[in-house]
Length: 108
Length: 170
Image 1 (cartoon, each protein chain N blue to C red):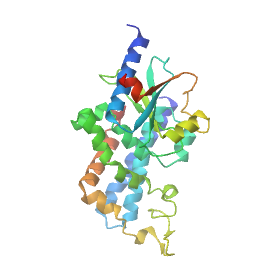
Image 2: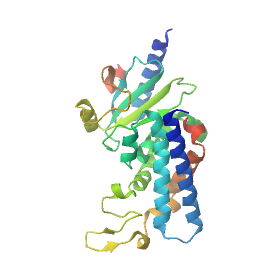
Image 3: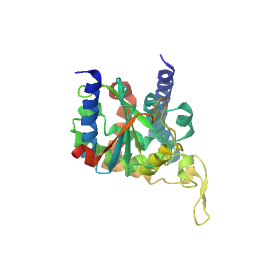
Image 4: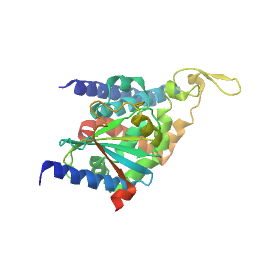
């Protein structure tokens, strides 16, 4: 199994789990899925508070998830502003390459 | 040490110093504003110590005081905490969700977020035109922190997070 395939499986399982745990989670954006050393997730959640910025928190590698993770929660309105370049992404994150996961998609 | 690690260590040292000051105020009969001021500062720096590892631009980190609520939401996804607290995934998230309203109240103590309302640093005016100094205000939040199960739990968590940060978050 390649490292890319492994990280895709881990990210996929994690995203599904986050949808299962949080009914207010609307979408998950996997930013730069080509990166093989860490998982960067932007979680669009109607229940989170508006800060006007993308605050990504670090999660150290762990038994079940052997990759460093950076996860930011933003509101749907903030996501629209990110798409319009009104709110910048964290350092090194780009929208050149990303995957969008919806609740329907992961349930399928 | 890389640049962000130096910043993280500095935020953490300051969080620990603010927390120590907070604890000292609990031993003294000082006005509540001082206790809450140190608590707000300790939680903000704790949150920023983790944010700095998450690719945030330094100017964004210092420009805003809002970070603690998002830190607590992130804590609900932290597998190491799950093990430390002996909880499964779903209860862990639910456990932290219950603590969010009080976390938000602590975050809103920062004068920039209090928006001309009660805060532990500067005088403010209420809608009736009464001007308050923080030192004279009773801060009902103190009772919610010290006398409710959620408040007691939240303060315990904050202490553990600050003291065992490297083990639990890095």
